[in-house]
Image 1 (cartoon, helix red, strand yellow):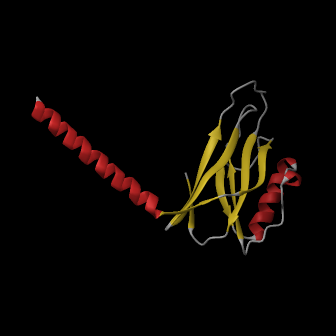
Image 2 (cartoon, rainbow, N blue to C red; image 1 turned 135 degrees about the vertical axis):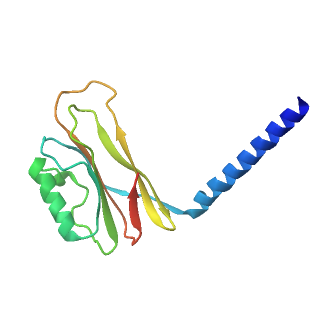
Image 3 (tube, rainbow, N blue to C red; image 1 turned 90 degrees about the vertical axis):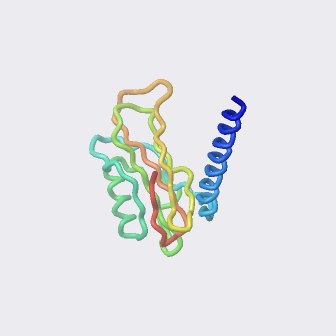
Length: 155
């Protein structure tokens, strides 16, 4: 019995040692946490919104097209913190949820982390927790981050 317990302890020790090596490898790969600047967050109110997607916008033409499309749905860019972006220094990340059947949903771009090979942005859908209204909504979140040539990966 004593030998069995020692064997289990050794196996567990090897497991935790390997786990710590693996996690250190990914942490060592992390270069920085990126703090985004909020451009706009809210809901589009139409069944003909923007397709569910995550976008990286790196030029004025694409940015103007997105703003135009959002304004054609329900004129939201007037609430943005800024609408003129210096794309020589910044990128825009935009996340659009699917059209939802009620109020109370939101989408958030969270945990933007730069690694040696890419930048990872975690997207989170927040579900209603209180009283909801039966209205079509499409949550969106738009942020600005420093320009990078690295691939942006959405999770």
